[in-house]
Image 1 (cartoon, rainbow, N blue to C red):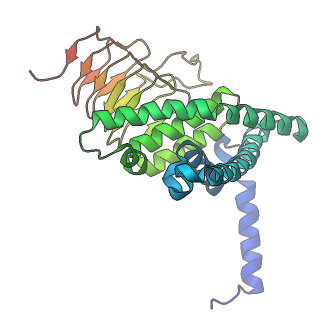
Image 2 (cartoon, rainbow, N blue to C red):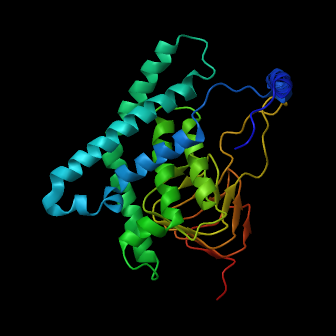
Length: 293
C-alpha cells in the first residue's frame, strides 16, 4: 500500500492547489461547471440504446417479449431524461447570472421536447442504416451496420446532438459529438445540417464544419473535409461570417481525402468529387471532378 503523504507534503500540495486555482483564469480561460466526460458518455450510450434498442438486448425485443422490451426501454428513457436535464442545466447555468431555478426549468423543458422527437430521429436513422447497407457490399446485414460501423455511430450521435442544439441546449451537443469524435475519428459539428439518408464509409479523419449543409442521399468516405476557407476570429475586428462551410446537394459522392472549402462553394446535385481533390469553387450538378475515366 502506498504511504499517506506527510503533513509537510500535504502543506506543499495545499500551496500548489491554491496557486493552480489562482491561475485558472490565465489566458482568458473562464469555465463554469460542466458535465463530466463520464456523464456525457453515459448520455450518449442512453441515446444509442433508445435509437437501436434491439442491439443491446436482442432476446428482450423478440416479438413475444414486447412488454419486457417496453419495460426495459422505459428504464432507459428515465435514465436518459435525468442525465439530459442535468447536463443541459449545467450547460445553461455555467455562465448564467440569474437564478438556478430558471436554468432548471429551461433544462427540463428542453429535455422534454427532445424526448418527444426521439421516434422521429429513430426513423431518420433507420434510413441512414438502410442506405449504408445498400451502399456497402461488405455489409452482411443492417445489424452489422449498427454494431460495427463508426460512421453510423457518429451520425447517430450527431442527430441527437443536432436536435439538442436546435432546442436550445448549450455546449452539451458539442461535448456529445466530441465524444463520438474521440471514439471514431469523425468530427461532425452539431450545428451542421445533414439530410437523410446519409452514409459515411470507413470514416476516420472526416471533418464537417458548423455551417455545412448536406442534402439527401449523400455519400462520403474517409478523410473528407468540409471546411472553411479562413478562420474568422471574434474580437479582432473581423465580423463572424454567416456561412463558412460548403453546401453539398442531393446525391453527391465525395471520395477519400477530398477537401471542399468555403461558404460560397456548392457541389451540385449528383456530382462526384474524386479522391484527394481540393475544391474551393462551385461544381455544377452531375459533374465529375478529379475522377478518372
